[in-house]
Amino acid sequence: MLPSRTVTHEWLYGAGHLNVLDTYLTPLEYTGPSLSVTHRSERLARWGCGKVTVQAFFTGQAAALSSPADNHDAFDGQITAAVAWHRNWFPVRGLRLAAGGMVQLGGGFTYLTTGGNNPAQGRLAVDAVLSLRADYDFRPGRSGGGITSQLDLPFAGAMFTPNYGQSYYEIFSLGHYDRNVRMTHPFNAPSARWLTTLRLPLAGAMLSLGYLADIRQSDVNGLKRHAWNHHFVIGYVRRLQLFRP
Image (tube, rainbow, N blue to C red; front, side, top):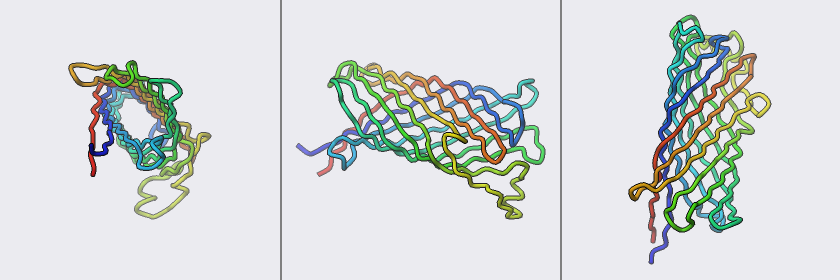
């Protein structure tokens, strides 16, 4: 029999609520409905003696927001891609605990329809992340479903940001650099992503239901920003068996 390895793909589609504060644009919090799509894949690493898994993660989010008085609108978008390596432990049958590191790249924007000199804010950041995961299979070795919970905590990184009172015209047209790339850590950018899903067998497939909390915050260059995203997600899990000689 040919040696094989399994790759697990999970697609999740979410809907929920986003709360955004970006003091570069406005001192007001904007809130509104948001949508997301998330893909997570996992396979056994070629190294680590069968105890290390590699995970690829992607999520895209979009939201239409309104001011507290509901007289101004805004649009927000965010894309995040990451790869993680987890060391796995199996303390009891059906239970898997994992911990490791993740490298994450994210970018996005917020646009206010009110116009003005600075109606939009762009974002770009890279992070090193502590990633923790737990899985429990209801019927180990069989397709009986289970539950998965993963917590990702950025602990070091770098982000692009204008300085207080600085316009994008000054940065990109005049070339006036003013500490526009800043190091980030839990004291100036406390952030977290928590994804928990319940897997249920359904007509020969595996249905996923769950909750995604994506909390991003920063306080750098005299500018504060937070994006609190809460989504209920639904999707499916697919396992592919790859063969190689």
